[in-house]
Image (cartoon, rainbow, N blue to C red; front, side, top):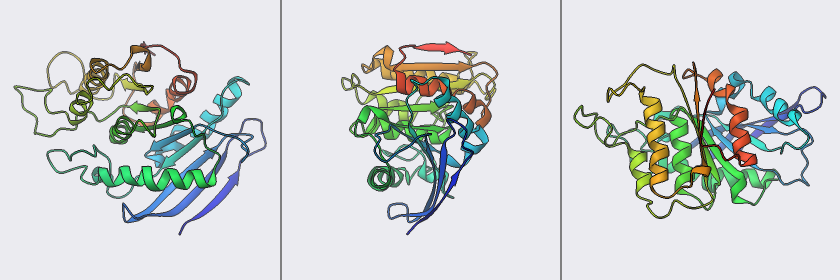
Length: 287
């Protein structure tokens, strides 16, 4: 069972519509899930729209998602409209977000497999039954923030038959299978290792957008003068390149002064959408 309510914002051109879907039950998670569905201006059931799933959907209002979508659609008549679905994190966020193949060394992420099944077998079919969503895999994306980015990247990388790409905002790519060891400070990062397992399989159509901010933290575990979130992000990109992902399928955005918070993530959302929908072939850039 679920219920939803619909708000129509002002009739100004390009203003999106927002549907709050509450109490969608997941058998895999054994809990109720809340969603916010942002529909583009002019949305119609006769259309065929790209889909973007976002973890930590409860943070989207703080990013100004409604205005960002209006800005995107108003920037040019040629900008492609798409659906954004914010998935609210549950009370067990540290268990449901992670890498499905294995929990971290403290047992966190033990429900990541269940979360993946929820997205693949419950959420996406639910959305397809109610909205006009494209059948083209290249136009179905997932993104997230911090630990939610780790989750989204794992889901996309592991399921190329469902997703065309991922957005990784300040990804918690430090997720480890063993406790930190000063002798090997960059060892045992679970998702980096999962990426490398696909050697020879990384030349598909999938595309990946990555972002990190220079003011997110001060930790530098390997003492190379680069903060860990940037190190982990760059190492993830290099891991993909090592297994054959083309450089033009990768984009890295380093945000000067960017912090580990929704406002910084919102500031780069239009750049992410540009890469996601317009296939810009830029490998790196700093703001």
